[in-house]
Every structure is written in structure tokens, then in C-alpha cells.
Image 1: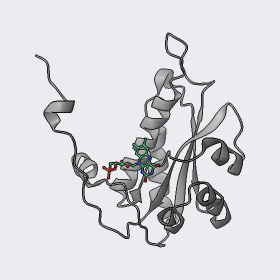
Image 2: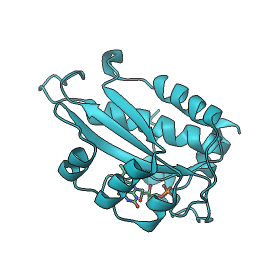
Image 3: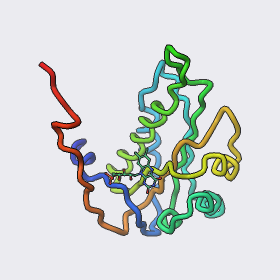
Length: 168
Ligand SMILES: Cc1cc2nc3c(=O)[nH]c(=O)nc-3n(C[C@H](O)[C@H](O)[C@H](O)COP(=O)(O)O)c2cc1C
């Protein structure tokens, strides 16, 4: 798919087929993630693609949605607030770095005709415990990965003029 077609076709998908994801597609998605920019190129992330059913069940206990359990894989991204670059006021930049890398994953998945859905609305402490993640690492986001079982309409966006301006 062409880049802008990928951007337009991507939706948050909340319904999945059990069809497995080919290994080469996962490999290309991994490469797309590793090409993501990060402040000072510190790459303060680790991605885990969970196919293992017992491990997926642990995640689904913390974020309990039937559509997450349907997906044949769950992408998990861990961020490290110590090894990342810090803003001039000392604030760690890890959320931005990880957000960009996760969006590389989401867009690469769309280019592979795979659905995904950013998920952050879980209890972080419970997710870290379930995945045995310890500080300075933490589970910043997860996403199901799989072939969509549903067709999702594009939710309305704010008018372009409200959110994007070219100042000459
Ligand atoms: C940072 C972030 C966190 C999100 N967390 C959740 C979530 O916890 N659960 C969920 O169902 N969707 C979540 N979403 C998906 C949004 O609801 C979705 O992107 C938005 O409604 C726009 O729809 P679209 O992705 O299909 O364009 C999240 C999206 C982002 C970017």
C-alpha cells in the first residue's frame, strides 16, 4: 500500500479473526519499529509480540475485552524512563519516544492488512505485575494484532482548519 493509503485505511479494530499472522509480516513490522526516531536515538523501548496463549490470557485478565482475547497476537511495548533523554526541566521523554515507535508498529500492521488498536486504559501496576516487568521498565501500551473481523467506520475528526495551520 502507498503511504497515504495506509494512513487512510488504518482504524482501531475491535474484532479479530483467529487466522495466524505470517512470521515474515511480523518481521517487517519489527523492522518498521526499529526505524522509529527517538530523542538522541536512545530507543528506550522494548516490544514483545505475544502469541503464546497462556501469556495472552494474563494480559486479557488485566484488560478484559472479548476483542482483545480474539486476536492471535498482542503487541506490548515497555518503556524505560531512566535510559531515555530528559527534557531541560528533567522530565523523561519516554512517552513520546514510545508513542512514535508504537505508531510505527500500528501503521506497519495496517500496511500488512492487519488490524490493531492502541490500548492504554488498563491498570499499569497490574499489567506490570502480570508481565513481571520491574522498574525502570513499565508497560506503556498494548495492542491486539490480527486480521480484522469487523469493518469500522472512520470516526469524525475535528475540521482540518481547527487543528492544522500553515502560517506564512
Ligand atoms: C494513546 C491512545 C490510547 C488509546 N487507548 C485505548 C484504549 O484503552 N481502549 C480502546 O478501545 N481504544 C483506545 N484507543 C483508540 C482510540 O479510541 C481511537 O484511536 C480513536 O477513537 C480514533 O479512532 P481510529 O483509531 O479508528 O481513527 C487509544 C488511542 C490512543 C492513540
